[in-house]
Length: 149
Image (cartoon, rainbow, N blue to C red; front, side, top):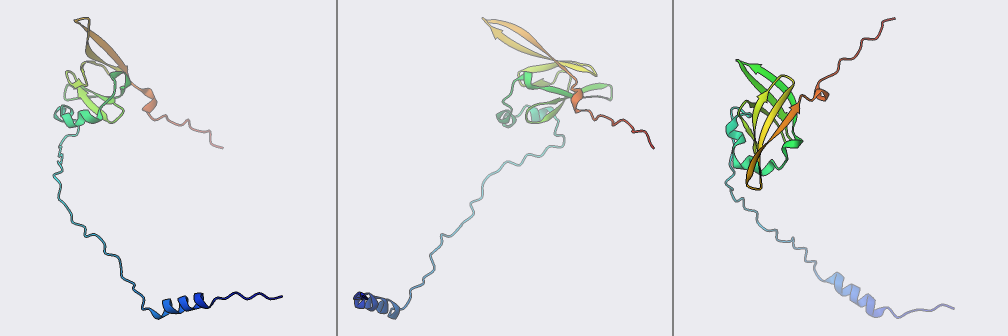
């Protein structure tokens, strides 16, 4: 037994759709206009200068404790000692008397440095002395020579 459905109205609807002209109108895209912004360009001749360290813009990125610092290098140049200190964000070259966060570099030796950080407790000021030893893990290790055959 074969059953036929009445599809005349569906065929008529399809014919009407085919007879109408297509309306392919591309969508209207919003027009992009560039708005100039006032960006501050920072030019430094010396990226290790103390002026750069004192700026308020650099304080926004430097949220760390002095306990997180590592001494990674030492330099004696023109009768002055410098220490390279690695923070979580950058490596700084500092000399005696330079400030880092709330502390101040008070001692520099080839193998260690000392940072004095004032702390206030019960209206008394204490000096917290933080000693940083040279991080030997950053120095390259020489490979032992293998015996030649």
